[in-house]
Length: 439
Ligand code: GCU
Image (cartoon, rainbow, N blue to C red; front, side, top):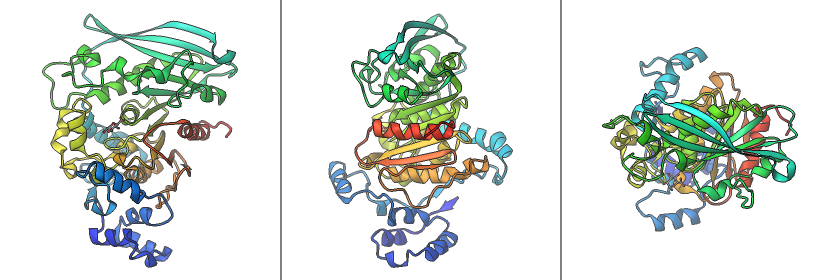
């Protein structure tokens, strides 16, 4: 467990009463003395911190939600590198053979639920092909991915653009689209920054997308429709999969196709998602290690931010607003985050040793940007145990400054909850670095 300092000290630091003692030697002392004082440093030095106007505005809108750093309760984070049997994990082999499977199981049991074992068949059919897309620079394919189980079927439509002049299979971004069809327009009459195909193609990437609603509807329908209707065993148990796990499963079915497409480098596919899609991307990467990279934008509670902080959205709020997203076991942790045997740094660590990128937006306090940075910070020891050589500063970076180190990347964009071209450009810079392409 990693202990947080007493609230008093935290408050004093945040109010900058102790600013004078925040010299480097003192920081060192804090770090050795109290283990986790860097939580304070990140907020108190030059790095990003929530603006007081945003805090006040959001607090007025939702007084029951905490947006004040000094009101974050003290908590203990489960140590990602200590196994359930209390043994320290000190080698890559022990991580891969013991701790990683253990954490994955804890997430299945308590958070996302388990994929049912119902057998199914998958087939692919290219239903649209245009080799002269985007002024002749790209090829467009629409692929119908059909899943058949027990006489019923479901089709996921995958839209895919690949550059025509690549001369070799290309690394590809697979976007989980949670924002409707206008964001994945294959005619390119509507150009959405949420899926900036033209920019991706110009930089030599494949750009793939599917609509999450093809896999499972985003409403509480008692799990009657979508892939739940197709594969679920009844009665549903507390650890039955939720809708986010279903979308993640859908991303894997798209990957099943992508690895067969000769235009695509199947070992260089990044799964990308924003917000609920960002929660999904993290889980897709955890469950399916064929994804070479995970990019999670503004995914917040039960995505990239530490749940125990009780800052912005909480587990109770998510379960109340979106009762279909997670397993019903997760409801046990409403207002009871400290009892959860995992926290989101452990979810992030499940991506290791593959590449992980987290992005946040400055006004998006509902998604707790600082909590996301802390989760990444606490996941990094796992990346490093697996040879990543990532260094994440104690101080959270300021607006728009990108952190790229080893296998991890992070930025916080100035602005609202969204995923825009500015974010994508940074994702592509990260992918250039990871996949050894020229910046
Ligand atoms: C809501 C929800 C978030 C989610 C977001 C989104 O705000 O509370 O958890 O990330 O919707 O998906 O846009």
